[in-house]
Image (cartoon, rainbow, N blue to C red; front, top):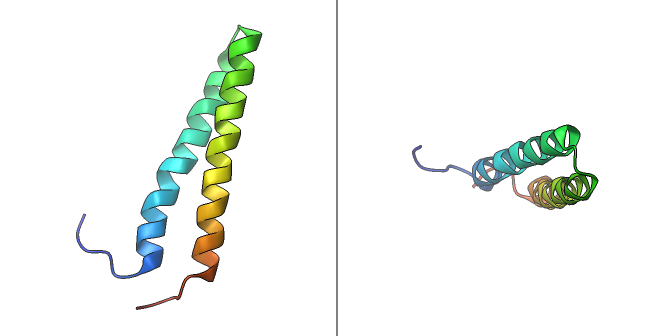
Length: 66
């Protein structure tokens, strides 16, 4: 992967799997036939979206270069 040059580089690497997790849990929820599991997967997707949102807020406040 190489060296990170900025905080934003690090945050981008952290944000990507959060988005992938949102999509993964959302797909599981959409395809779930069990209503209890659907709720669990929707909650997990929401938690991952919250993680992503926090990282994006940090990124917005991060210096653009170092």
